[in-house]
Length: 316
Image 1 (cartoon, rainbow, N blue to C red):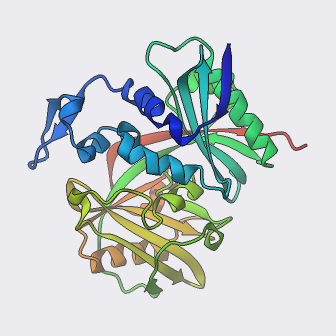
Image 2: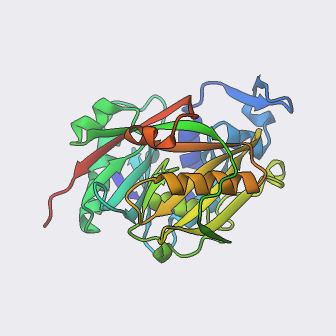
């Protein structure tokens, strides 16, 4: 019998074990950026993180789960038990964005312990996730990193769009805009805004991720540039976050929240200008495939892409 329940901090070891079971070979990155095979026990927390994020180590996942389970109710973590043992896990975030997402629940994680596939654990979690989405008044349930298309199709989701990552050089510009330093705070500041750039998960989840203290401060990240601005271009406000990439100094991911419907030429020029002012050489724009022509002529694709799947929920 499968039982689905809310996760607790006591589940941290079991959840980390589920995620670790998905890694066949572990790697260590040397100072020259070369990856070498390694044993998990020999890796420091930062190196474990590089193999798959906070889920790879109990010391980093514990604080992450605590934030997810904060009493504001925006985060959701569920586990599925079989024979009284935690065998699968799912995580999701509530958010509000413009159409086609609307009020949404974004399923960001769903994993089953290696060797336990085919027992209905994932399906039990999907049913529970959809029930939570409906109870929260969501218009859509979405998965923004959908690798198991057949699984999501069986649960009523359909492919919506493909997002790809393009790289552009940071470049000074004479575009007129205003900008002031900004530290992200409460979600109300951007509730209902879209995220035309850097939406690897949902606009809400990316906002929560860049909050002060949301991610561990590894020594290797100590001098990485992470810079926020509140900007305005042609009377349209936006929040910009540039995040220098570990092991790729001088390049930064662009994260942009705005009320605008897309990425205008002037907004793009402002972002590139601020990147140049910050001393960055290259900016990574993760955008919907249909938006790539808006980036102009000097971008190049770095090969990374994600598939976005969506289900419209019936209103009750």
